[in-house]
Length: 235
Image 1 (cartoon, rainbow, N blue to C red):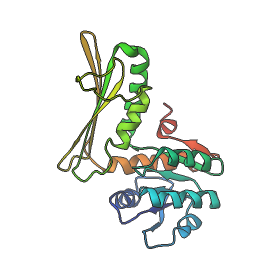
Image 2: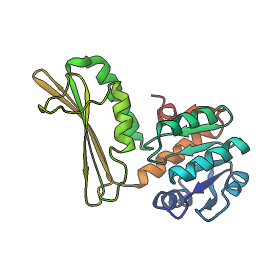
Image 3: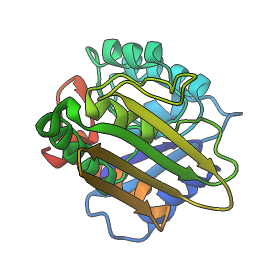
């Protein structure tokens, strides 16, 4: 039985992971222990086979060092991480199995693969606009998921200039915050005489916990290296 450690167990995602593990739906996985901001996080890595981290950038950086120290698989779904954090994760993955995704949803990761394919095939005759909506308490904007989708287009984000125009073939973001929206992301390709819309809407926050546990089942036997949800899904 693979014991799962949950960092930030009192948080919304921590509780979601705990509910999933206690549901009996995950053969071969069991809840091991959890940690909060007041606990010594080293015990989480000492006592469990895989650790899942949906916390804060500061806490995640500490967990990253512990994953290297104890050579334990670590799954990171923390938002608000920087490019320097991403590089630190790739460096750490030389000494542990590490999986990072800005969004653990199976559907969102499939969307990213479709966006990559569409952007490659359509070329720069099509402008791209990513529109995302989240609940009013969402801190980062654009969200980590929107930025992940932006990277999938292979294009550089460009602001609209003073004349109200944007260079052809570039990428723009539109952000909305309000209510209790879990997450909605649309990638629109605007071309001559036509428009293509690719959209994902999250209706249940539990889908992120399900994705993370699916990743844990996949990651537990993998060698050291940096992985994403697209590896889990074979995309």
